[in-house]
Image 1 (cartoon, one colour):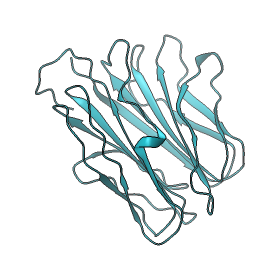
Image 2: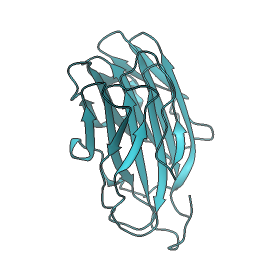
Image 3: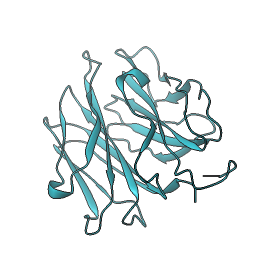
Amino acid sequence: MATSVRASSSNSASTGTAISVSAPTGTVEGDVVIVSVHANMQTTIADNNGATAFTEDLADYKPNTASGHTVSIFSRRIQSGDPSTYNFTSADTGRWSIVAVTLQSPHSSVIYDVAPSTGNAANRDDSTAGTLNAPTITTVNQNSIHVVCGYSDDGAGGAMTPPSGYTSRGVPVDEPQTVSTKVILSPSATGAQTVTATTNSPMIALSFAIRDSGNAGFFAML
């Protein structure tokens, strides 16, 4: 069976340091969960799940200093007894948002086809525009799931818009972000993908891909 998105969940708040999100509906042992955390200010974002900790795959990306905000990407292969709420902590009190995406039938040992990294990210440290392109990446394996994330440091809130042709997995608004996905059937360049904020604002955009399990034919669908 091909790797696919089982479900997603999101949450946000106008202030605080404790960041949490419910496990997406139907998440079970063996699934992989990817979590995107967006916090206001130049800060650090830490896992707060104790013995069931997530791995921080992109740690505290905070390129915009004039109107600071911080992004981290976490992942975990779900085990028996894992909690139904995932918890993280910002070092500073402020706006935050979080999106969790559950992947069913994941690859047995590898999560990412192209891992999240600062090399796959873009940013703009001013309020001259309301759009930003997530950089193109080249997938390695067929049926990879391209993930595009966009983040707006906008105190007024408002739901962001994902790229055309991508399926939205969450658009929490207090520290706005968007997470969306699309299956890339054969290894290829994804092209730069545009995320859109409600208002002109400092922005971050990120692109990475999930590896398929390799247990399905070429035309597996999400």
